[in-house]
Image (cartoon, rainbow over all chains, first blue to last red; front, side, top):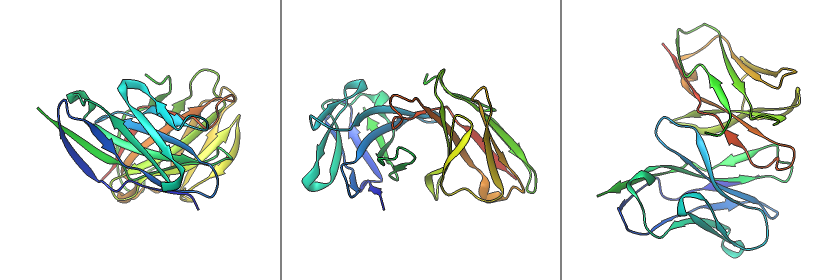
Length: 113
Length: 113
């Protein structure tokens, strides 16, 4: 069965510092991978997605993620964090049937001045 | 703004009652998904409809039901409500060309007292 783990429940970074959020997945075939962000009181917004091809994917708001098949990982990165990036981040894996997207437990990001 | 709308934004009701949550997908999207987000369970997939037909079921309780109407809007009906049903309920939609990519609405926050 597909599953997604996000090892870090909560991360705090200083504004302007770099960020890496970890995501590991379990899936038998090549997965469809997503990162979503949820700001307080808001719905989930798609940051980026990976289906195939280049393993480094660029998303919105300056985020990027790298797919590493050997490590079953899809870590999200941003070179310089802004205070407005404080939010909950969800990694997700999609199945080939497209019927279900399995979400990880989320990582809460706090940004300090 | 994802283009997915949900009403109401907030709902407060009592145990044993029944409520209906409404979702309008993005224009042209045929698939609608319902999710429940709670602190203890995280983001859980409930059910998917595609062009009026039920397509996939997740962790949806028998007390819950959904339907998608000819105009493609969807309703999630929650009955015999319990305290534990208090949660954020999200609707998402996807289109035929990229069915694996879901766009989320702002959610309905349900509080059962």
